[in-house]
Length: 242
Image (cartoon, rainbow, N blue to C red; front, side, top):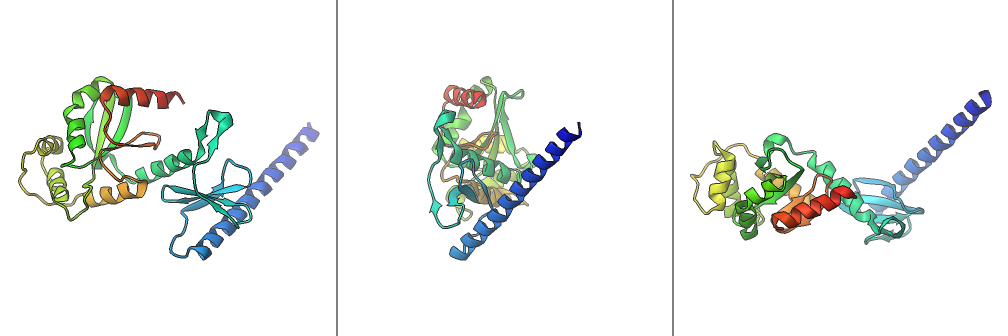
């Protein structure tokens, strides 16, 4: 019994020492990156799944750094023994999920299924044609068990007419109804109040939204562009199986 206990203690010490060494090396790599690129500091540096490479996270962008902090590698890393698993996308998705924790439920405009099989976040623009197409097919998305949490993303920026419309939607008594009317081309009474539209625009930029509609899955995967309800449901089902 005492022999087994001794072995366990030795293994715990080795594991702790290895973790401490890894943390120390992560800090050294981070310092080297800041020294080399003073205007860009990584959010985190940690061991990657690839032996000898560390993962540096800048927002949702991932770069890899050799253990001696001499070389950096930018690109997609795939695990061929794990079904061509995209390790880089896994890390990016993890970073997006972390950013999305900034959003409260009260900041979303909800549509779709009341008993969802899948819940997605959609960054939407009032004047975007495909955003309107998606919204007009909301009953179809609901029929496939998809719930849509909208965040307002005026793609032309916070000085654009789309931003003003988004703020008017947010400041309406019934935001869901106002969003539908605005997407159908109805002009809403101008309104202003404390709102999260600028914050959502900034958040979208941080996680890599470049156009609308942009669909973010619950596990942090970003899918740009419109997909018909059936195709989106199939893709979400496939993702859930992995």
